[in-house]
Amino acid sequence: MSMDFFDVLVRYETTLWNHLDDRLADAGTVRLGTLSALRVLRRHPGAARVQELRTELGITVGAASKLVDRLERDGLAARSAHPDDRRSSLITLTAAGEAALDEATAIVDRALQEHLGDEPAAAAVTTILEHLLTTLEPDPAATR
Image 1 (cartoon, rainbow, N blue to C red):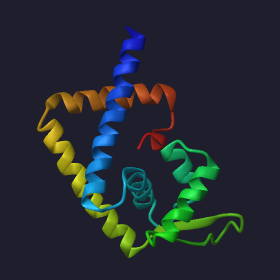
Image 2: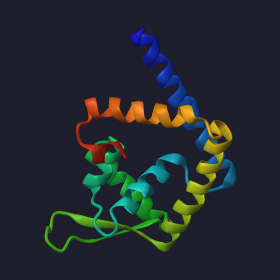
Image 3: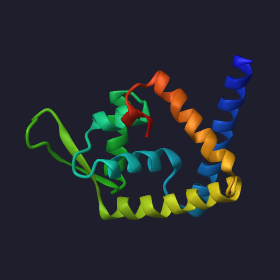
Image 4: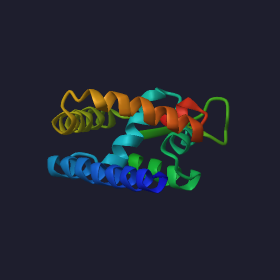
């Protein structure tokens, strides 16, 4: 039973990710990985560091740093010196990043609405998965 749950969950997540990522690609906007990073930056306005991306996206510090490099290169985010920590920088969304985030979020929201409709089970599954995630990641900020 446990492996069946795991197999179905992973296959569903992968299939859903690919479906949503294809929708974003078809629309010519940012892809799902970039959208996830932009969402983290919006949740930490003016206070995001590489560490927030690392924690909330579940990636390494090196991967988070390279992600910020790409966001900067694409004009979606900007780094500035951290006022209290010379070893760190703050990452903020640019106007282009805000616009890309809003556009991509609307596309994903529409795709999910088409897929799930007003399915009450989706809310129940979300609650269950959030609970299960807290057993693996006790920090609620890491689950967003």
